[in-house]
Length: 385
Image (tube, rainbow, N blue to C red; front, side, top):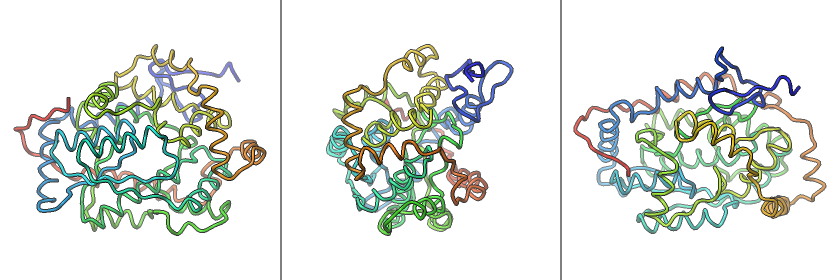
């Protein structure tokens, strides 16, 4: 009911999030979660320069006499592009860049990737998915009527990064995941963990029609092997610097000729369509609320600015129609078949086989393992501007 609607007094998360809670001051649990994560994971606030330099020294020592000493993922988006610039221009590392091409890249994404690799002298390994297999998996997740139909891409990317690191005998994966633009946690009903291979396979068995043998996959057992045996560390490198999104965009435009693409994750046509059309229309989910709220919590946007942005249409009608036709055709659907999928009852991840209990139990361990590196040097002076 409209009378039950409530919005956080600090950020713009509201009761469209079914698991939201408010304290006596009207501040939501998502804001409190951000503060906890910021205290633990924003390393630049805790002797940041020496911690970063110690990490860089360790990466260089472990990668001595090797062609590459770290892995980075490159999508052409702000965060991954900033990682590429940071590790080459400011940290002096030798990255091996990988890109999982799921055949949904916008032209600006492809252009950004080429400019970055050419300007910074980075070697790129692009993995192009078997489209028929990947299409079948994406369709399975759409037919499952769950809110996070992007899991196939997210799972494959992480699996590919770990697999490549192990094959190349590289112990460091430097990722663009970060607290200041992404740490407003969301309901499990908005987005379940993409690492759960049992969940991925369970949905595909239910709705898929072909095999997905060639797609990169990552079981929890394999993840434990990569972390414990191969000693691969998955590090959110942007948490080691005072990362500001708008400053990063200006820097990338000036130094690399990089181009902005209009919104978070809009470098993918499918992600743009899913976030701006399918999620709000079918699930009443507007992920801009979480994205803007993270920026509010990190001081990069005011609440008033976010509320004004929310009044804007994220999807111009001409682009919406163009994307809709493209997505339906590429997935091999008719308009009627797509509308049938859109009209199916909403489901939860709990409606399908999953390893939720085990994934949740492993989360603290995984986070601890990723933070195992210690930093001791005190004579550092690295900045990223």
